[in-house]
Image (cartoon, rainbow, N blue to C red; front, side, top):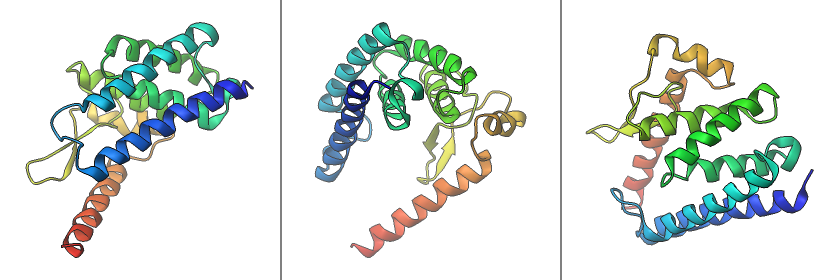
Length: 181
């Protein structure tokens, strides 16, 4: 395992999540646009991930460990300024899945993000929008009748279970908001 590379990837993920929380806590996180500081960090991290992939291939569990493999996925997931790069990462994740060297959910989330950003229906039902009443609703899904079979193959719960989890999180968020007023 490459510990230095693992540490670097985890640091990238930690900084991403720290900035996201900081912007959220300060009220600076806009709902409709991409915050310039967040965009700059995502682009910087994506650039570095490209270099890492060029030198080592996809940062899989065998190369960097589970936490750093998750961090690499997060960097790719947040590379929304470069959908072509995200799509390349999907291919790399597909190969790593065959080798059982990444968690299946990582492929599902990244592939669905690429598809929804490209205007295509998602395949695994991992990407959600908010309806007019503020409740989560999945973006359109290709062949929705078999989505749960695809989700199960990658270790995900059913779409109905996931939707219930997200709805419950929103209920709790709303209840907390009411209590803090």
